Amino acid sequence: MKTRLGVALLSGAFALSAALAAGESPARGSVSSNELENEIRSELDSLRERIEDLEMLLATLVTTREAEMATTGVEPGGTSLVAAASDGGASATPEIAVPSTSTQQSDAGMPEGVASTGGQPLSITGLVDTYYTHNTNDPADGNNTLYYTNPNARGFGLNQLKLEIETAGDGPFGFRSDIWFGSGARLFRDGLEPGPLADVLYLQQAFGYYQFGNGAQLDAGLFGTIAGLEVAESHLNWNYTRGILWAWNEPFSHLGARLGVPLTDTFTGTLLLVNGLDNAWDQNTGKSYGVQGSLAPNDQFNTTLTWINGPENAGTNDGWLRDLSWNAYAGLSDRVEAMVNMDYISATDEMGTSATSWGLGGYLRFHVNDRVRIAERYEFMNDREARSTGVEQMLMENTITLEFQPVVDDARFLTRLEYRRDWSDAPFFSCSGCGEGLSMSQNTFTIGMSWVFGPK
Image (cartoon, rainbow, N blue to C red):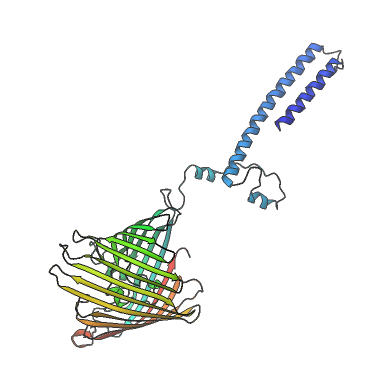
């Protein structure tokens, strides 16, 4: 554009000079040749100033255009997708756009995502879990014996309102926090410092993590145990109620550090160094450690072996607690799945006296169709030395669960109908109409419903 303007002006100047030299000056009688020459020079100076102004404006427009293309990802000389869509792709030369206010604010360092610090955005997921339970024993204290997640034996109950907060960015570091409200949280709260929310609030997890390039992850803080098969959230298990082993023979959480490393495509190893089992405040100077190996050769089979041990007696490092757990999953067919879980705990006091409790559980689930599933669980726990329940007994339970998922391929809302029978070889279960208020068995009927809200 600058070249064309310069050529045109120079051509006009040469033509006018030639005309003057040939004596073809307009209005000779009224204007002298010197006056005409001065007038022409003045016009040329004015044109030169205008050319310089145009060159400056053109340079400004080109700079603005290049900056706009850099922010929208369009190559120089190309057409943006928005411009092409607006004119059906016929436009060959898009108009020059001025950066918007929102773009300028983003470039100035406005925070991205939810985090006010400008770090990784947060992902917030919630869970509402409510139930109705009827206990045929009509226990005098209103509690279902052995139950942690649905303790109310007299009707409706809120098991948990849970909030999971986690960083959702692509960075190597982040954090996760799980906060749990509800009647189920009251039972987990034992052992933590008292407070006004002691009966309703439970901090299940709160840890930071760092992810390495090879897929390994280091967690530090409060996190759920690596032992066992079942988990605290109802909708992630096959049955609504939690089994005996989960509630009475396995830890819930640990405070410390955890490192998981994928050693091969099918095998993952985990190391654990923590205060102990279910103790946010360590009761001695010793630490517990654990090791785990998980094998998953394909989608139809996986198995995990876990070992945790350490000094767990208050005020002394003498006497250790040892926990060995093993579980496996097998997809038997497109409709049938099975799992098995074993857990063994041995505890030795400072005087060298030991007590053990151990048990085994089997699970079977049948997919009737895309919406309906039937699951059964059978467990026993040998507590002959009264380490876990405080009573020398053999505990057993059998649970049958009918699950309905209204929306195919979206399990964020589930309804479960469940019958469970617990029994023992000793009077153990609360019963208002039984002698001494105890029975050797317990039958419950439960309707459980869970809603998961947040990203699908």
